[in-house]
Length: 263
View 1 (cartoon, rainbow, N blue to C red):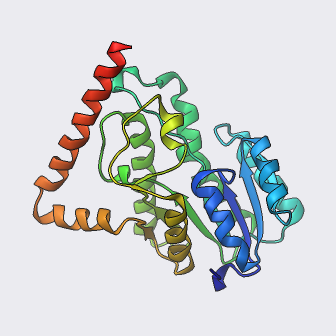
View 2: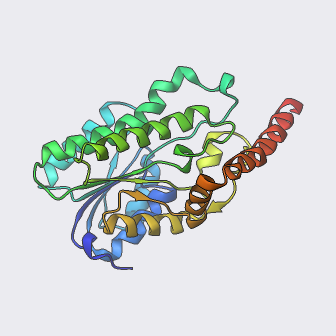
């Protein structure tokens, strides 16, 4: 599908070598933009480059503060503007709250929270006055908690509260947040072994399409799942809906805990 706002645009996509990021790249290419595909996995980036030779690729670990510097240095040397940045890179953590990897909390917050905020602010400073939009992949867990994701949900909730403040200050017309539900990517595999998948699950292709449509229209909040939006609205009037859903997910969580104790 062709998206006019992305035609010949200068676009950054982080987490571009897999999952939602990969689908964003594939769906953007027909609009003939210049794309800088960023990922920490050099091998996958090389594969992506071999499939789509027109791409620019950059290996960067955004869980480190130096990761954004690599992107900004590349952009300064090669482009005179950035039109869109899809800050999609992120990582999940799944475990009971007392077992989560709190020692690595700084890196998780750097990757999921600080990096997308910092890159957006830095690009705006680098190209003042440019028509730039930052699109950050948050999560439905910014609104609804699910057992096992205490640390991950904390990062995504932080993004939402930061964005709400920016919008409230009337200076955030350049900012979009995306709230996907569970997606068929490596998300669950990297979060933990045989972890329960939250219901329902969407394809990364569907999510990427929703993101691009929302970004093209300049939406502040992008919800790839109409069902989740309906549940948010209905829960305002029937507050038991969220509780029922969380009980359902808690039962799956308990089964997972039992299985782990038997290993």
